[in-house]
Each structure stands twice: as structure tokens, then as C-alpha cells.
Image 1 (cartoon, rainbow, N blue to C red):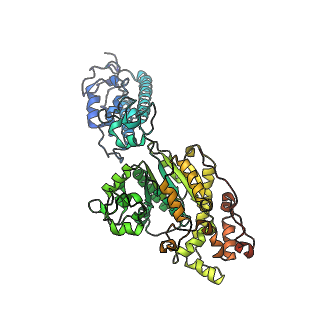
Image 2: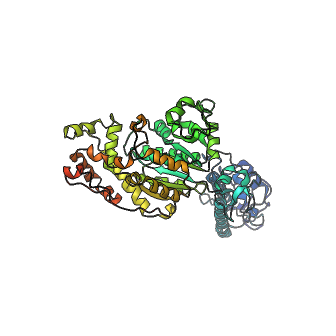
Image 3: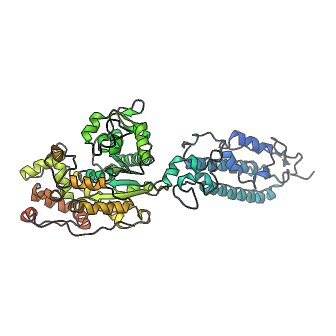
Amino acid sequence: MPRGVCIKRLQASACCTCQSNGARGVRARPDALTPPSFRGELHSKPLSSFLPNYRTAGRAAAAIPDGALGERKEEPSSLSSRTILAAAGLAHTLRGYLTTDFFTGHVSQCVLKGQCVLKGQCVLMDNVLLALASIAIQYTAIRTLTSKPFQLCPLPSPQNCGLGGQETDPPFERGGGAGCEDYNYFTVNASRKTHILVLATTRSGSSFVGQLLNQHQDVFYLFEPLYHVQTTLIPRLSHSRNAADRRVMLGASRDLLRSLYGCDLYFLESYIKPPPANHSTDKLFRRGASRALCQQPACDAFGPEDANVEEGDCVKKCAALNMSLATEACRDKRHVAIKTVRVPEVGDLRALVDDPRLNVKVVQLVRDPRGILSSRIETFRDTYRLWRIWRATGRRPYNLDLSQLTVVCEDFLNSVTTGLAHPHWLKGKYMLLRYEDLARNPLQKTKEMYDFLGLAMDKNVEEWIHANTRGSSEPSAKHKFGTVRDSAANAESWRLKLSYDMVEYTQAVCDKALLQLGYKAVRSADELKNMSLSLVQDKTFVAFL
């Protein structure tokens, strides 16, 4: 018998026994990544049958237990990982059958029509078969990442679900052929539910802007839900630029915002302390600032005729908030609006803006940093105690935390630079709004904001503007977090509260932000106190449509 010719054909679960220079073939070992059920399939069929069947790797992925790769089952990437690793296992298994043992000189166990052949022929076939296996693996991976189970139905178009859950595409392959009508969230978003985010910093007028949205009868509004994320993950209120804290905070914030925009308020329970019992809590931050959470079905204490419920009355008269009822209240509204001062820059929101399941529109509110500093000194008296000492004595304390000011200006500059550069991912998604412009012309600027959001202003919004922008002698008008103001007079009132040396220092560290946002610098104490001269330039910021 010629040397190196197989004396025994490849049988099920048996390895070819070859004889060459006295050496015997060695059984190839399937890779550990290959699932047991897949290994059995390898041993029960001729090896050559696996090469044209590139879908085998995809089927093998299902045999890997969920969670074995450290991925969540519901994420599309987890199935892709299982498929790719299973395919890698197939490749390694093939190599085990095909590779020559170069250290011992054993003949390569090339399989061709069930026979072993000589070493020279094995090398060529080894390369050919491995190339085919590589092509199959890459094809499987690409098909897995782009296949129909991961297509979403966020928009009404001929390529996906239409309004009202009607299908225009074949049903999803996931879960036995479930279609878009089985995924309520995507059906809701098919009607173009708008997800509004008011991006601001503390003491910039964000509560006022949030209430402009809260008054709309079709908007479900949440006041600072990210407060709970911050107090849970980063208990100290810090303005540090700690990169690790920032990444943790931003990652958790994006996940929570994504859930809240889908009206999944249960996700918020993970951050509320103490944890809600039976999905009920009285610890939701500023619950009374949301009209929807002070009305039915979230609260039975007030009826439809109670249009303007004071925040304090809501907290007192409404029972503990049931998150199931809050979720129902959210789903009853056509749009969701969230106000936050805990996301530094618009660039941090790209993952949300790019998410095809969402229709995020960002309204970035900015204010003169000098006015922000003045307001914070009055509001956060303990935190800004050293600034108050500087204002009172005229001497800057040596241990003054300057980051309380510089971080604001850096975030403004970075965020506005990104927004005004008009990147493609912000097209139709970004509007810059100056607080001073809103304070001067509240009705006009509110209409511009609503036009950008694609919403029609209703009479509730207009009535609220008239009631809250003309000043009041009521105690609520004096509350530091209230929204009743003589808005035009309040816009530049900081000029009468800050000393010139504090203003001069602020202008030095925030010069670029002031210039870009259209705020004039003052050159003397007299110019600072001359209220007949406005420090706000006439500058128009057009929404990026």
C-alpha cells in the first residue's frame, strides 16, 4: 500500500488512521469555544460538508448559554458575539483537523473524500480550506450584525412599520415571527413622539424653560431625574473634572434617559433612596414640578379643572407616587420632556441623539456666566461662601475654588462650539437659546422653541407666560427655585450684586465663552453699574434644521 494512504476511511467520531514513516495520526481536538452540541455535529458528518454551509456557525451560536460571554441577552450585540465566537470555534476546530504536527513530523490529517494524503498535498489543501472557512466566518458575522432581527421600527416609512402598528415589512424573525405590532414602544414612536431635552447648568433659568414645556397638555415633563443618579453614584456635589466619575455618571445618565423617554419609569427606582416599596415612593425629586404627576392617573387629589396646581400643594395632597401610574401617565402623553443640569455638553448626548428608537431634540439654554455666578452666590450660600467673602471684603480668598466658575465656561464653550458647528448628527436636533433673549421676549422666544420642536403652543402655555413674567408680590415670587419673575428686569440684575473685581476676573477666565455667546465685557465699575447700557449683544442663533 502506498505510503501515507489512509487504510481506514473517516467514520463517525473516528479519526483517520494514517501511516507515514511509522507515525500515526492524532485525533484533532475541537476548540473549547465550540459548544458540546456543535461538537457532536462535527463528529457526525464528514468535515468537508461544513465548508459550504456557512450558516452552521450561526446555528452554533444559539448553543452557547446566555450570559456566558458577559453580555445581556436582550442586546443585539450579544447574539453577534455568540455567533462570531462560535464561528471562531469552528475555524479552530477545522484547523485542528487540518494542521500538520510540525514538531513530530506527523502527516497532516487532510481530509479529502475521507482519505489522508501525503504532507505536500496537505499543505495546499490546508490553506484552501482555511481560506474558505475564513470567508464563511466573515460572511456569517456580517449577516448577523445586519440581519432583520436587529432592525427597528422607529419611523413611519416604507421600510418599516407604519402608523398604528401596521406592518409594511415582513414580520421580525425574532421570537417566532413577531411583527412590529408586538412591540408597543416602537409603535408609539412610529407616530413621531418627540423626546425633548433641556440642556442647561444650575441657575441659568432652566426651571423657567422646563415649565414652558410642562404647561403643554400633550407633554409629560420630568424635573431633574438625573439628580437621583448623581446622589447615588457620586454623592458629593462636585465640579471636579474627574474622568472616572464623569464616565460613570454619563453612562448611567444616558441609560436612564433612554428608559424614561420610553416611559419606563421603573428603571428610575434603582436610583431612588430608599428603594420604592411596591413601586411607590415619596422621594422622587421635585415630583410637584410635573403637572402630569399631580393629575390623574398619577394623583387623585386634583381633577381636570385644577389646571395650575402649586408644587407644594401637589406634594402635600397627593399620596406617594406609584411608578406604575406614573408610567401610565407618561404613555398618555404624546411627548416627553426632561430638564437636566447634570450633562456637561451636547457632545455627551450623541448616543441618544443617534438612537433610531428615539426622536431626541436638544434645547441648550445658556446664560451670561457672570449672571450665573451671582445667582449661585445667593442661592448656594454654603457652597459659595468664599465668593461671598470676596464680594464683601474685596479680597479674593487664597483657597477659593475657581473651578466653580471655570467649569461652567469650559462646558459652555465646548458644547456651543459643537452645536454651532452643525455636525450631521445634530441636524434638526439642536437649538441654542439665550436666557436673556427669553427674558426680554418670552412669548416670541417660546414660540420659536415650540416651532423648532414641531409642537403647537396651546393657551395654557401663553397664560402661564403672562402670569409668570411680569413680577409678583406673592411669596412664591421670592422663592429661590420659583419661576415667577419680572423676567426683563431680572436678566441683568447681577450687575448690581457683583463687585467689579469679581466681574473682571470672570471676564478674564470666560472671555472666549462670552465672545461666542454675544456678551459684552465691561471696562470699569461705572460701566458695570450703568443699567441703561445692555451687555447683551443683538445676536441671532438660528436652530439647526
